[in-house]
Image (tube, rainbow, N blue to C red):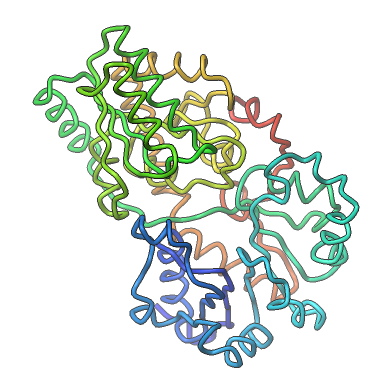
Length: 402
């Protein structure tokens, strides 16, 4: 229900997609016409192929900067709160920053390729101009990933003003006993013990080859499994060749790019979800989605979302990024333990529906914004909009084991 006495809030981002719309919808329900989402550019072609494009005319709060530049510039300057993220061009937000008005930045990592890059004098100058000089201003940072705070700590930006944040895809609700029973029935029909899913773009940073190599190991161990590979990209030919070389044609199926709702159906049918990206994965919303689908997840610690969402052995299993041997061992262990699959999947589901969901995120962002306008910070005890821990990438593996 719209709050008639509410403030105005505008989100500025490069584009809107299905990972952002649910929380934006929740904010619109609270703020009505006082809420806007400004899109500054067109979506990349490969993401359009994945079904990320939306009928923008159907989103009442969406403003396209390319079509309404003057109106968008006014919104950015005049809104009570502006959340700015995903846009490399600082010119959109500079006038507001110079005016000393409240800005909430939302950012992924500064040094995704390695914190050693912080030594660049040119890079340091740019970070000072964009971030460090506002250390004492009314500027706050939402960290889209567990290693973001560590990167910004290097450049001495936003001291005591860095908060846990992320992405909040649509949340589905299930009767878990029914969901698990359906999976068991499907496995019995297909004469398999376990169904495994990998989904994403076939890119080097996502390491889809880990899934195929693990499948080969499972075959050697005589595990009755099926692996679905959903997606496409530059490594597809190599992956298909691996499947043929390892004799996995009857165990591994390629499904190409699929719309988000179809990917969700694959997740609903999967016992195990493999998330194998390296440090270049800033967040990884497939983690939210697979956890929401009550999959038992195995993920690398270097992925931005992992330390925020997973605790090893409680709601997922986490391997040290780059250590294939540990990954393979965890896959085999989980395939052989149906009770562990269900326990991890059920706990993962609860993590999403209870805390990491669009409605809760909108509620917390609303309270945080309202607090700022009253001169205080409303800080949560855990989860979204709690204080972001300063975790260097090499510390993440131990962090998820606390």
